Every structure is written in C-alpha cells, then in structure tokens.
Image 1 (cartoon, rainbow, N blue to C red):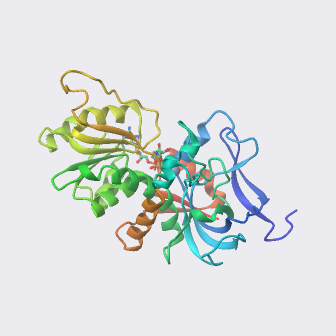
Image 2: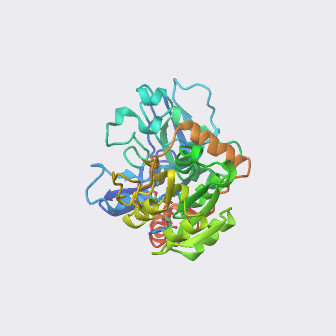
Image 3: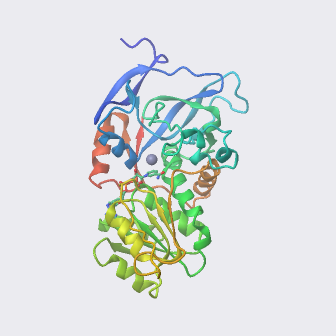
Length: 354
Ligand code: NAD
Ligand code: ZN
C-alpha cells in the first residue's frame, strides 16, 4: 500500500534482460552532497534500447532507466551550498571522480577512475536514472537551465552534450569551405545538424535510411540529404570535388556506416564514432594513402561530453539557436515510446513526463 505522497514514487525499471516494469518504489534518500530532484522530463536515448538488449542483468536489483533528466530541486544535502529548493536544472551525466588527471583537465567524460574500458557512473546505467518521479543526484551534476522548458532541457543532457563534444573535438576541421557529414538524423543527429549550423562554418550533408529524417535535417540547416545506399560515398566525393568531407559524425556506428565514413572522409579529416552499433572501420597502414584511409585522417570513439559542453549546449538552447524536436509521452507509455524509437518512428527525441 502506498504510504504517503512523499515516501514512494513511480519508476520505469529494468527488472531483467529486456524486461521493463513501471513500479512503485521508495523515493531515494539523499546524502550530504546530494540533491533530490523532482523530475520534469526524461529523454529516451537509443542507448536505452541497447541496454534492453543486453542479455545479462546490469545490476542485481531493478534499475531505473533514464540518463537525460531535467527537473526541480526538492531536497538539498546538508553540505551543499548555492542551491535552493525550486531551482530548475538539467543533470550532467558523467558522474566522474573529479580528482583524476583527466577530470582535473576538464575531461570528465573519460574519467580514469572508470578504468580503460568502462565509463564514469551514469544515471540509468548504474545508479538509478530519471524515468521516475524523483532522482537522487550528486549536487555537482546540477546545471541550471533558467526558464527553459523541461522537455527541451532533458535531451540537452545527452543528445546535445554528446553531439556538442564530438563537434567540438573536430572544430579545427570545420573551417569555411569545409563539409561535415552527419550519419543518422535521430535524437542526436538532428541536434548535431543544428550545433554544426550554429557554431561552425561547415556545409552539412545529412545521411539516413528514412526520407523523413532527411527532411528533418533540411529543416534544421542541412544543405543536402542523402539516402544511405551503395552510392552515398561517391555522392559525397562528388559534392566535395573528390576530396571528401572534412568531418564525418556517425550516429549509427554499424559496419555499413563505418565503411561509408572510411570511404568519404577527407585527408586530415575527422571521423567521429558516436553510435554504438559495434561497427568496425577498416583502417589500414599502406605505403600510399590509398583508397582505404586518407593521410592524416583521425578516428575517435567519442563518449558523452564535458560539463562545460553541457553548459554551452544549455546556452545555445536558451539563445534559441538549438531547438530539440520532441515527442512527449507519459511515464506509463514508456514501453510504447521505446518501441516506436526502435522502429525509427520518433521524430527528434522522445521525452517522458512523469
Ligand atoms: P535514434 O534512434 O534517435 O537515431 C538513429 C538514426 O539513425 C535514425 O534516424 C535512423 O533512421 C538512422 N539510421 C539507422 N541505421 C542507419 C544507417 N545504416 N545509415 C544511416 N542512418 C541510419 O538514436 P540516438 O538516440 O540518436 O542514438 C544514436 C546512437 O548513438 C545510438 O547507437 C546510441 O546508443 C549512441 N549514443 C552514443 C553516445 C556516446 O556517448 N557515444 C551517447 C548517446 C547515444
Ligand atoms: Zn544516451
């Protein structure tokens, strides 16, 4: 039986491999350095679908999903300063150690405490996430959003943060006259198109398997959209005078898109792998640059972003130059929203409102 409004809450939880349940659970207690947020909105990322596909349990007990979270401060830990009940914010998702060499250099997304292959703790992937009425967060993860709408703000936590970081790491390539290719115009990709348009001089070519996603890219500033097929690399080489694209942002990351990136990246260009489709780009060391991989090109497996990337993404959204396309669902309809995302039927980002 529900004890009182403030003791329990509804949470969308992973209770076993591929099994989601909306459960009544205790409102989480907070420690001295934490905040309790009342969740205003929680975005659904394709990574949540990858998590549902993992054949083993991520955690022994049920795990509340959701790593794109915006909300209001409800309770404040006793050691926390500078925050007030009612403050509105978005949650920075890399809950990194804060003291290792990478963290102190501002590279919290590749915190060394996580080890070589892991990532820093992330809500919804280890600690409980935000597809619930409340979430406990470390106070350091709170980034103010002013009066930004919660449904707009939540996707900034990952869709914008991760895109912003990947683009920022290739800024040197994105000079006037450069071409940037965005592969996969979903939650991340349609935000990436906007960040490229707002913060770089590059001309954007979008690639997707669905025509409507290409229309979405055009609506947000892409110069051209190409359907992904056997002729896509040749089309990009054709549009760039044969040299290729100075930067390729791959928000799919399967073998097919990795091959496209290898075939169309320019000499000294940047290939940024963001999508987690387990694709393997074929990068070969050969005496001549050859058709396989051009001289000077770099590949980076890009994870999340830094806290300053999130602060800058919030600033872009508040200035009106970044507008996330959202489809809003009730928490009860989380499963339906995930199924629609799996079938490519979400335009932009799906957001749950608890
Ligand atoms: P999404 O489902 O919203 O968008 C994916 C898009 O890719 C869709 O528009 C789809 O039509 C398109 N697509 C699918 N197959 C394609 C192909 N072969 N060629 C071209 N386009 C294709 O997904 P999302 O939430 O934007 O996430 C994208 C990927 O990024 C996922 O793999 C997700 O797990 C990953 N991700 C990685 C990080 C990171 O830090 N590296 C962070 C967030 C998400
Ligand atoms: Zn994500």
